Image 1 (tube, rainbow, N blue to C red):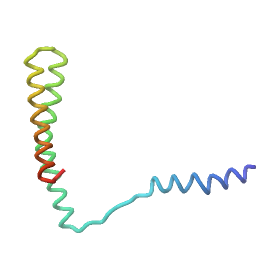
Image 2: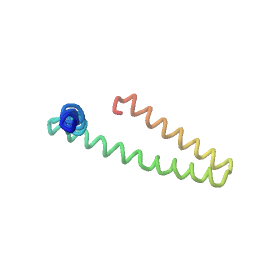
Image 3: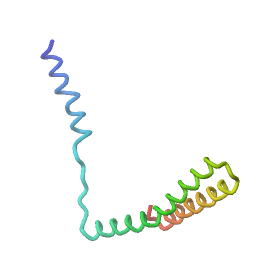
Length: 93
């Protein structure tokens, strides 16, 4: 019975684990990789301040409960959404 269990493990479980953990990589040319890195660097540099401001505004609004903090939070969230939409329209994201 132990042999049967080991055989079942070797036939079914082990290949599934290997298939899920096997590294799959795509090799692109150097020009495409450089363009992708440049895009990501630019996108993150523009997004990070928006993300920090949105999170701070969310925190302030939920801690203080003031209407002006909620208004600021909504304005920053709208600005972030417009940034994403503009990126989608350019076909970048």
